[in-house]
Image (cartoon, rainbow, N blue to C red; front, side, top):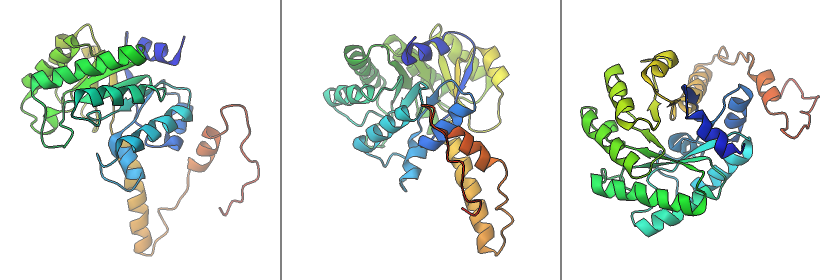
Length: 279
């Protein structure tokens, strides 16, 4: 079974968490911990470059996807934002370039490329259809995830978001995703609306559990930039203690040995045995 086939199989039953690493190291760490698939995060990737979310260009993102695919043998779902194009022909070209990196899945948002709102329904559907056709022509086994992001701007338009998901499913999306669904009732409605296709739910705070999402019929859960934010929060907290003259936050713990174990070369190489403890 290929990596892409494995990725599709994960969506057929049950519910799995697909965490969002932000660089090669975090990807390898999450594989070491036993996750079965990974998804990139536009915000997490941008922060590693010292940029804000949506600030990376197409070339940056393609480089990032190649790096993430090369980091592990796990399926990678690409956060491909709005496809880096307004024009449909250019969108198709960009999707083809993304599939060539070796990704197993690709998400397309209904947010306008210039970040000045959202595409109307008919235009958004046509863009999903264009991405579907590009995938079928270049790498038909790549999963297409269609995102309705309007809840991130207006949490009250749940019905409109779900209507968009239904239209995206009809246009050829393999998996549907509306970040901002936050109640049991709304999630259940979305699951039923897009069935039998799988629904992805974003969880960035402790408002639900894996078992609850499984019971509602959700197929996968992603966390967006939350893991990256947790890492940056830890750095900020430790750095502030340094500014205050304290070293209490530099306690170490299991991270060093855990990371050394995770980063042993996948091809059977050995981590260096002698590493100065002062490093």
